[in-house]
Length: 207
Image (cartoon, rainbow, N blue to C red; front, side):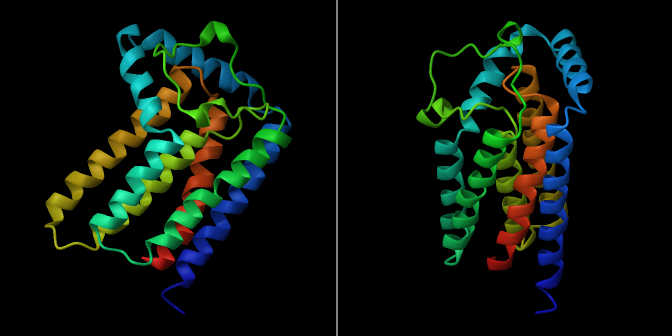
């Protein structure tokens, strides 16, 4: 039980952080911050990244992210991975709850930069608000699980650091793309990070 306690405490702290941050978003405390961040990113990032970031958006969709997580668990032969998948799917319930009850409209269309004529079915689920970012939650969840699995391998310390660096680079690109493409505000992404991290830490109990 002692070795499980840090995971349970981490889950509770991160989930409470998500709830508290959601309350602040609902009170419209980040309107100026969200707007300024979107403008600065779009002003300072080349339009040549519109397409790469758009493909990254597809990678972060529920359909591909779920398949990738399942593949990871199969490769690492984790029989208890079914519980990890359960928590991964379950985290979408508070995401939908946030989108329905936290009044936080997404960026206006004039900022929109997604430029691929394809969307997965999950992208059409629009409860009415943009908070929190499901892409951010999924990316962080899978990254934490992946990093934990790598930590348990017999790779050398430097090989592990290399993988951790690649995971971090992927997450940064994914999170920045959410705001740059104007699919989410920065506060949506932060909320998604708290949500994804909380359920990822809880799922580590079964790995």
